[in-house]
Length: 415
Ligand code: EPZ
Image (cartoon, rainbow, N blue to C red; front, side):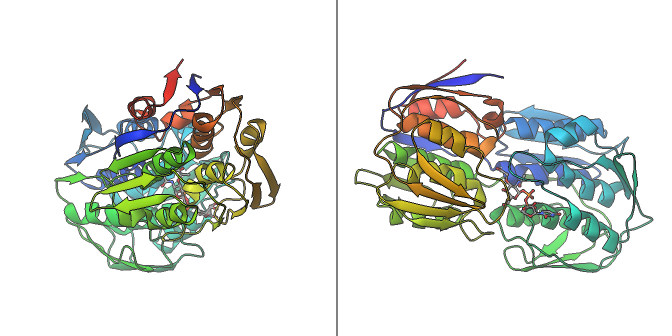
């Protein structure tokens, strides 16, 4: 496992280009196997999770070529409907392939993806929905075998607006017979991007962004070329890093609408934030002040920005309260912040943050993707030289992190 050496202090100043969205790219790459042909996906970030998703597609028989940010997927002949156990455990979002394999092959064999550092992350909502679509599931020493003669459109009501379950049901019902109504769905921008992708292949999916998605099953799909939306969480992460270092940055290739809840909170803590059609500008030259945050499903404040914002609030004036409503265990990174001098008390899903004047450098471990981003943010603002280890977690979701931060004036090297 590699590590970053970060000398804190320099203000982040300049411009950064946001990459394609990890959380849009993963379900769209999975969905490409619904088309018995060739699919071209553009603006795909070059990150570990995308590589892992492509490895799963190759394991079931797809031929994949990469050309910079473009991926060409030939899913004409699939040979297997089994998801490799190792890849399933390494990346829980592989479960999104199940819906695509069921849609294409009417069968799939996989293991439970397992939890991770932020929670148990069960897939009960996915499995219940597959059963309602006519899939027979049976468990056999840790594997789940799914089979059906055909998929039948039906009405599915989600207990919780799960992003992954929403996406999986969309994929499983795209080629089903009849219409599927999915209610209480996730409304994240990545769901709309997936809907647009499916429709560009000839599917008939409507309602993404509202609380009900309607999927009219079609007999087959066709080739297409499609571009991934910008990564709203990467954009929010750089805004937090700039604010933490009292910097001034412009982030390009972002949809400001997708990060309106983050912009609202940045303004609330005294950052100056301006927007244009595809860019956001931030200046943090005033004393930052405390605020309160509750993470919620989109369009509420995103859970994937919780840890980066807690870092920011740990060096603002006053007391802030952050409640994590989406995952049951998403404060593990706080130990690293406390090691750097933050004053944070955890009570279940609530963090009580007493702002301190300055953090001090320390050696810390990135235990998961967004917690790792929080620790990098802290190291950029802290006095002294920090080491952030286990950076493979960060490289799962942030393309060219060292290069982008270096251009903004950060003193960061990868070892
Ligand atoms: C997606 O995960 C994202 N990952 C996560 O981003 C993000 O944090 C999450 O949505 C919420 O926005 C990708 O898109 C690849 P969920 P997902 O199903 O689909 C519970 C990142 O940092 N739940 O909406 O797994 C679950 O335990 C990652 O980029 C069930 O109980 O999230 C959690 O508490 C981290 N049963 C809540 O719902 C189920 O069957 C939200 O999970 C499914 C979910």
